Structures are given as C-alpha cells and as structure tokens.
Image: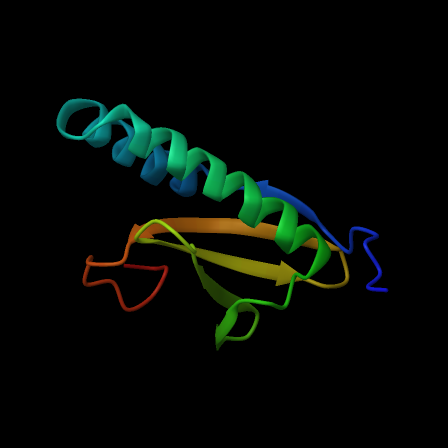
Length: 104
C-alpha cells in the first residue's frame, strides 16, 4: 500500500492568491458559478495530492514545478522545498495564458 503520510505542507504566496482572486472575479462575472466550484475543488484536490506527492509536477527549473489541473484549464506553478517539507504555490495560470515561467 502507498504511504499516505503527508510529505509536505502547502503554503501560498500573495501572487498566487491574487491570481486566484482574479480568476474567481472573472468567473463570477462571465461564467456559470459551477466553474468556481470546480476550480475550488480541483485546487483542494491538488493541495492534498501535493502534500502526499510533492514531486508529482513537471519539473521546470529546480526547485520549480508545474501541475496542470485535471478537469479545469489551469496550471499551478509551485516550488518544493524538501528540507523544509514545504510546497509553495507560486502562481496560478490559465492554460491559454502565454506564460512561459512563474516570473511572467
């Protein structure tokens, strides 16, 4: 059986929170509210998954990784600090955004 002990704690940056707030505001204005529920549940699922499997995302430049969400068109850029046992959500991008890195 897989070891289901959390390997890391997830924390978020101010920029990630700003990204998320912007998307939620846009969805409130333009889309069905069910999209917000889907995004929130996917982000919670990603958080729990990354606590267990912090290296699961695609490595970009060490220690930065990205994790596409499964059902909604968003990508979490995150850093895994193995020594601190911490996953840091850096940015949240829509998959259509022309962002090549979390610094953009």
